[in-house]
Image 1 (tube, chains in turn purple, orange):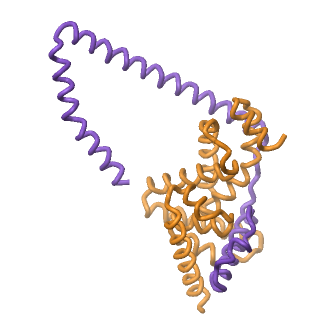
Image 2 (tube, one colour; image 1 turned 135 degrees about the horizontal axis):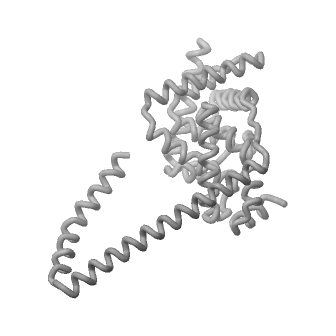
Image 3 (cartoon, helix red, strand yellow; image 1 turned 60 degrees about the horizontal axis):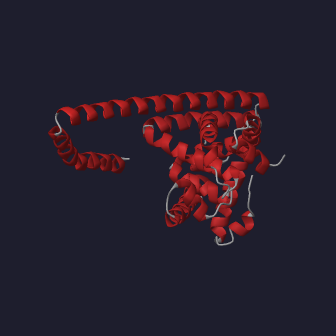
Amino acid sequence: MKEYDSKNNNSMLDDEDELTVKQLIDGLEKLDKWNPVSTPNLQWFQQNVELEKKRIRKKQWKDLLTFISVAVFVLSVGIAVVYRQPILILYFQLVGIILLPLALNKTRKKVSNE
Amino acid sequence: MDEKDLIRKAKKGDTLALSKLLQLNYSFLVKYLMKVTLHPQIAEDLTQETMMKCIEKIQLYNGESKFSSWLITIATNLFIDQQRRKKREKNWLEQEQALRKMKWNAAIMNEEWTDVLDVLAQINEEIRMPIVLKHYYGYSYEEIGKMMGIAEGTVKSRVSNGLKSVRKELAELEGV
């Protein structure tokens, strides 16, 4: 199924490349012929869409609950520390500043390894 | 109801419209994946995954490209991710089995197998994909670059070098 005019598309090719492209297109068309695709009925798609939507909603609720729980925990710890020993907040921030470059470096390494 | 109406309704949460949209594009997607994976089972599995992703991300479709091109982008990236996770040796074995099965299908239909598919199967999928997208589907280098998340120049060189390598392998196979 070519969506564009392949003749126009291949106008920059030399004769040899054009022949290779023709062989490629023929081969790929044969592939479609040898492996016919049967499209399932609409009900099957509806069932899948509904199931997937349900799964996404469930996941979103789970993520939201996790986020709220973590936020409440962090906030409670913060408030408790501020009221009892305010100096600890400064220590936490210092540790954070030291650890931040390490954490960023680790992330960069992960990306470059891919 | 045309595709634009279906997309508009699907984005508003209409399950029936989204189902029709997916049904309309199902065969196109399987056929595309069959051509780039050269593996019917992987093509079917990736089609399912692409549809799941589409259901999740339909709100993000902005209509800049055709809906089918958007699906191809999702499918292409899922395939690239899958290939990176798999071990190369296992990939090769799976590919061999799939090719044998497809050759069997061709034989059942009394058709002669074509060498070009063997050659395509041998080349790396990151080269095979832009060749198929460019020369079978007719996408521009820029569009393919966007779909695969690589520079336009990289697509050009992959297609050009890939085509040369296909030609060379074919000539060797045909004994020219």
